[in-house]
Length: 97
Image 1 (spheres, rainbow, N blue to C red):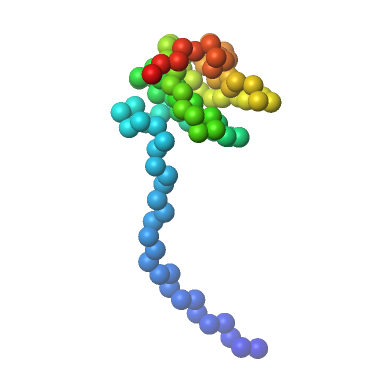
Image 2 (tube, rainbow, N blue to C red):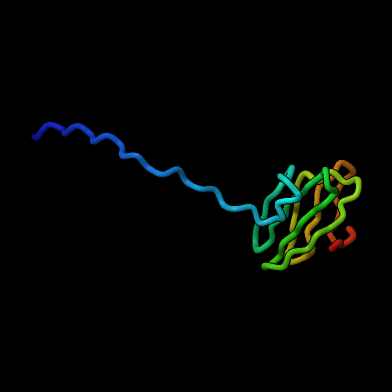
């Protein structure tokens, strides 16, 4: 049996680049974001804005006093967002430009 050869040192590699934000830069960093099944969202409490992108179409909502912490989806229905006061359906929020 032949003895093991020493491992070669690791070569220098470029660090992986993160994906670019998909929301407008003027909103800053979201406090929470996520997505699944062709939908993604980002919540910006300081601006009172919730962005929801569904199948490539972006909508911006006025989140008012809601503090969004998560989302749930069910069989193609509009998503509901978890807030400090319970769940809020996205269709109950005002769309803004």
